[in-house]
Image (cartoon, rainbow, N blue to C red; front, side, top):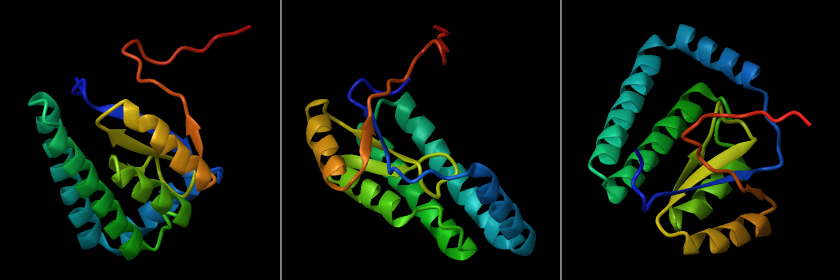
Length: 153
């Protein structure tokens, strides 16, 4: 369970991305560079373990640090695989988020959405204003303990 002080914020870059081509590039990178691929998996695994431990100990600062380390691992993968995981707009989204906590691309990257973790709910409005000024659309989404529901009208 995430610490109560941790707030999730999400924005859309207004640049859609397709997951399939990103997955294909990732598989191609894995096949051509197995050592670098294994290094990425190891680095990512360490980040996830630190993140889980930080959640379990309710340590906000370590959570933020773990997210930053994961973003760094993805940036290294992006550089090595030349995949455009963190586009210019996603980079800007994350850099803005860093002023309040941490941020990273979500999903396969390459566009679409980024996420931020902030400490105070009061920071959300300022974060959203900065994202909007950078031509991004904040999304009013919440984490559900019950999972996803689809409503038919």
